[in-house]
Image (cartoon, rainbow over all chains, first blue to last red; front, side, top):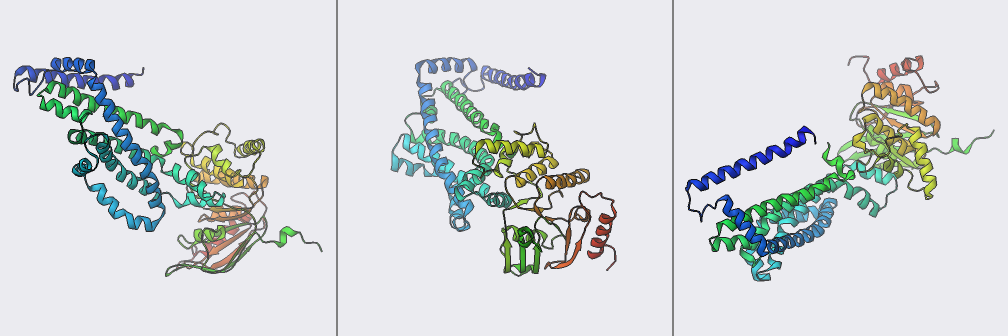
Length: 255
Length: 246
């Protein structure tokens, strides 16, 4: 391992360790009652207990399932709509204001309707995640398509690419770097939204678990869940960042 | 007297072509016939409509009035970023060979083109991994691939440093010797026009008209300091009012 690589592991680990030490001393000082400020060892115990009962695992799977469904449906619908709006000025003129409106309306404001329409369960959360991903993806795709340099299409024309080939060989590869960036951003948002959605519109999942721990005054379990939510959010981005290593999109990140 | 077909059919011909964008008149009454395998350079003040003229020749812009006739396949080399950045060198050049259906034949021609531009070892590089000069060589290879007839060049070397530009001129002459084409080169580089073209068209300010045609009879490759080149450059400079104050 190169010295730089060792340092990039060591320094963050040091920060995390320092944070735990501070946490330990604050809880040991007794500024807050243990029920409001659990000690690190209480959290470790709670983690073992939750892992063993399997409840934590089930909540993780449930939340990931909802995020995946909402995210994939939004991407599958949002990219084609964004491409269309990017290509056709009348479509853009007609749809951009309303897309901007929904983009700026917090998906959480839809919560009452989500419950009225879908009840408490998977569908309501998936619906909210869909809303939080769909509009930003449409806007990002549209902007990317509208910004493709005209020279690419002149080249396509002079080399005899047909309509469908222009889409698959020019438009889509040209927008990939920006679309991948939008996927990373919106996946992060979706992970934030699922927790909030499940707090109110769920009977399981990590968001519900957080609410449940609060109601049961189990702040030790609450901290376990917070750590798990944060770590999974980071992992989701680590997975999606792999898309930026595809050779045919590298150009978008190196200029 | 026998006249070859090639000399009768004009690959590119403009007849009284004018073009306006709204109220902005860009081209006015341009008539121009370019002979088979002729190398024509177009020079003129910046913003005068040189690139627009090239787009009319390529068919990317339709003239407001007048007619354009084109015989043969036209390909354009751009100033920069004409390559698809998501395709490797090989994949970009293959675009020019996409109508070669036989796979072996395509591979053979691809290897030949890579030889021609001396970029072996860079087959799988992407454009952003190449220098500006290498990128323009790949673009030339792509444009010269297959059976293209007419090469339009829109300031192809203007983004390069001076020495690379000089080298690329020699490279272009060499490539055209291997694969002769009818060429229209738009440039603001008077030296480049003098060194490369059979005929130089000097355009006026917008709306562009043809102000003067200068023929250069000397064979290529030409040295930069050769009499015919220096003389042509002097005449072009006089036409664009560099020599005499207003």
